[in-house]
Amino acid sequence: MVRIPASWAGARAALAGSGRSGGPTIIRRINVTDVSRYVVPVTVDLGNDGVAPPATMPGFLAQSGGPVTSPGAFANILFATVPAGTYLVNWTVTLAGTVGASDVNNFALYANGAFVTSSVNAGAAGSYPQTAQMVTLAAGSGNLKILTNGAGTAGSQYSATIAQNNGIPGTATAQVGPQGLGQSWSLDQCYLSTSAGQFDTAQCVVYVGPLALPQSAVTGSLQGGSSQFGLGGIGLADGWFVWAVWSGGTPGSLCYLRVTGAKTVLAAG
Image 1: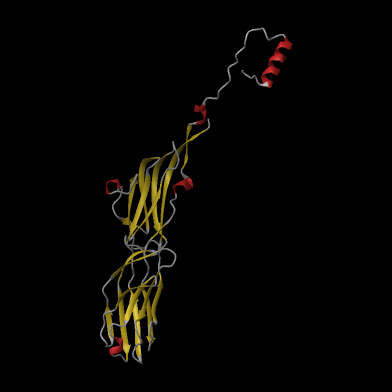
Image 2 (image 1 turned 135 degrees about the horizontal axis):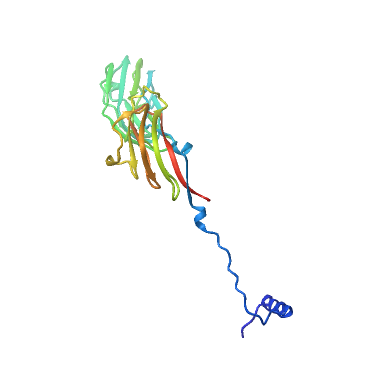
C-alpha cells in the first residue's frame, strides 16, 4: 500500500477547495543565477602576497671553550647549543701549562650527549687539529660538547674550538607563488636581502618554475645580501613559484625574497 504524506493530502485538499484541483498543472521555471558572474578575472597589485616567508641559513658560528685549569674527569671544556641539522664538525684541542701522560688523547667530542670520538693529541703543550666528524643533531636540543675523558695533570690548561659550520647542505631556500585555483601572477621586480646586510658574503640564485632546478634558473649567482633585478613580466600559474636559494651566508641569518607585480584572481562580477 502506498502511503501519501499528510502534508501532500492537505495541499491537495486546499487545491480542491480553491476550485483549481481540476485545472491544468502550471510549471514555473526556477531562476538560476549564472555562475559565470562569480568567476570574472580581476587584476590587482600583488602586494604582500609577493613576500616569501623568510628562510634561515643553516649552521652556526665558531665556538670556543676554556682554558680550564687542572680539569677533572668529564670536565666541560666546550659546550655549544646549535640548530638541528647535519654538520661536518672541524674541531681543535689545545693544551698549555703543566702537561704530561694523563693528558694524552684526553678530550672527547659529544653530539646531543652521545659520545662521538676521542681526540688524538700528545701529552705536550700545543694545538692539535682533529679529524672532522659528521654528526646529525635532532630538533629541540641540538648541542655539541668537548669533555675530558679523565682528570688532567695538575696545572694543565685545556681549551677547544669548533670552526664555523654552514651545515649540509649549506643552503637556505625561500619560495613564493600563486595560491588558489585560477590565480595567476605577472612579475615586475625581484628583491633579495639577508639580515646580515648588504655586505653579506652569501650568494643567491633565483629560479622560476614548479621546482628549483638548474634548467629553471633565471639568474646567475647574485650578491645575496642585497640585490634587485627585473623579471620582465614573467607569468606564474598555480603550482609555479619563484625560488631563491642562498649559499655561503652567515649561519643563522635570515634570508628574504620579495617579488612585485600584479595578480589576476577570480571574483564576483
